[in-house]
Image (cartoon, rainbow, N blue to C red; front, side, top):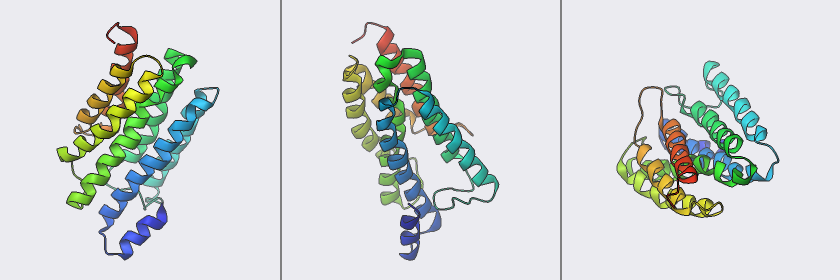
Length: 202
């Protein structure tokens, strides 16, 4: 992904805009594609330990002066939150629900990776900077609702998964201090997934 940052900079794209593009591609490829492979592992410790390692690496990079400058912004630690919430959401749902629900366990991570990734790319293309404009949430819903429906259907909560995708697309708008959209997306979508699993709503 570093080459994409350097390419954009050579094309005259502003530094923060180039960083933001890269961060969203990291979301999609490092977060989303990787999450799709997690259920093929036999244990939830794999995503958990991987996320801990990446959390430490990204945090240290910030403290050492953004060695990963091509996708890190000195003003926020959202990439660190992304790493920890990616692993914790998969770990907690998988550990709590059991192996038969491990495809369900990756849904919040997919929302955060693919959904928020597309959201950021759309906003960046439209506004040329980081923004919280609702147009991004519309495109996020186009991604997350089908994702939630599809993966939710694997365990009988297709409608619940779709609603969780809609909720994730709404709460992405919000950030409160250090509590960023990565935290809101994974927590709220996990809660709604659990509601639809344990309550006879479908």
